[in-house]
Length: 255
Image (cartoon, rainbow, N blue to C red; front, side, top):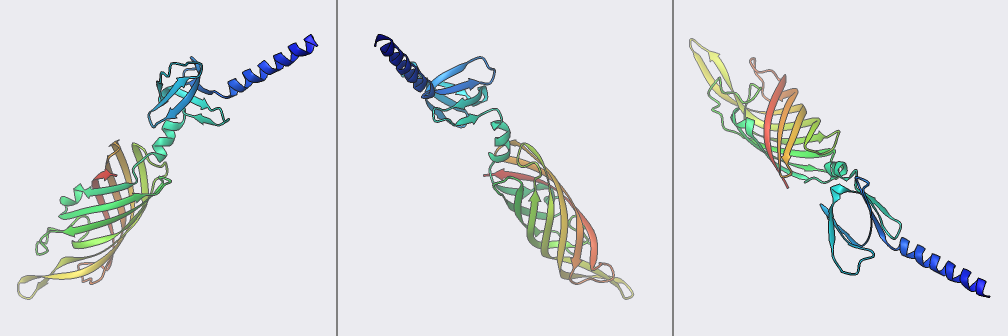
């Protein structure tokens, strides 16, 4: 009888100890220096707050998430922290960009655009709007790399980010522009004269760009483009279809 009672007590204590062990959260540090038995664990973006499992003082401690390897919770779930910085590079980003195209001012255009980055971080849809302010009567005042002075254009760009979002990333993708512009037609009837002609145009580009984000709210972008231009009202000096290129340097606000 006494032997049976001792065995029963031993089993009861073992079950109690095992239940207490499983009822605690275990925090494993990244440098493997300690394993902390914790309770009331609260995880925020930068730090994790907790209380000691065997402490009754109510003192709340905090650890930087960068110092934590993983947390094994009492319900059996496990959260790993070691790869979170890499995951945040891909997924923790602001999905909207309002962009001012700085270089376009040099080529007599005022251009802004809006881009939305989809949840995967690998695809962006961008809509530019541009107004030209050059003097169409000046033969040497063409916009950009084309022989047309832009009055207005808009379009759509589809940007692919192979490595997702981050501080430095490469993108490429197609772009379509539709707009109106002016060009000069020179004629000679005893003397030279010049007339201003208005036309519409269609451009198709392939963009290649590099984006640098020194801070989360701002990005700097350099873009090189090559493609073709279709002119709606050509003449002997302005081809209907022509190969064109472009370069842009942009400043973006991310929100």
